[in-house]
Length: 202
Image (cartoon, rainbow, N blue to C red; front, side):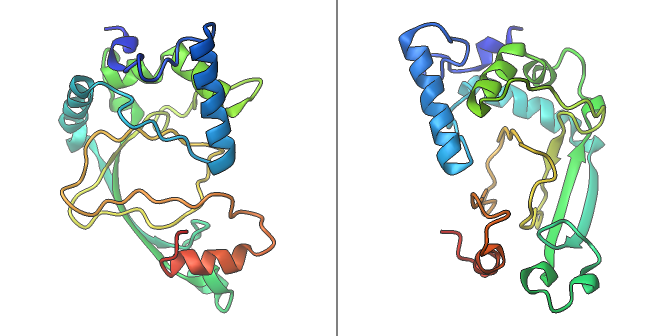
């Protein structure tokens, strides 16, 4: 299986860094990411590929380790340490399962897509970085998030410098994937956080 066969390369020519169209796509992707902090590629995978990868993920679901916790947006769990400190004192609820990377079979489509060099090269071009390396964590490198009824991941700042998320299965209801760009280290970070946590994601 060639990972390129999973991707709609006519719509998203991530392997083409030579032609005018390929270079224009990369430049558009980089500018979009720089402006919004997010690059969403709807329909990135062919529908048949999504079905295959989702089936792989469901077959591994029984390996998921579930965690339920209350934390703040900085992922601190001792909320009493932040008493009186505005948004940092507000608890967020997370209930999610995770299938570790070492549970993915070596020949699986998910693992092969993760290890595919052209995908890394494209992400690197979007970021505009001199180097980009895969996560070396044998458990967290390419994990599968599993959400059951009532599952959620509360508002938080990611601990990693960047994240790549592949959505394989839409929820029957709910399950909104929300983000707000450019909050961290703003002079008015606390005020913006307060609005976001109150439901204003504009």
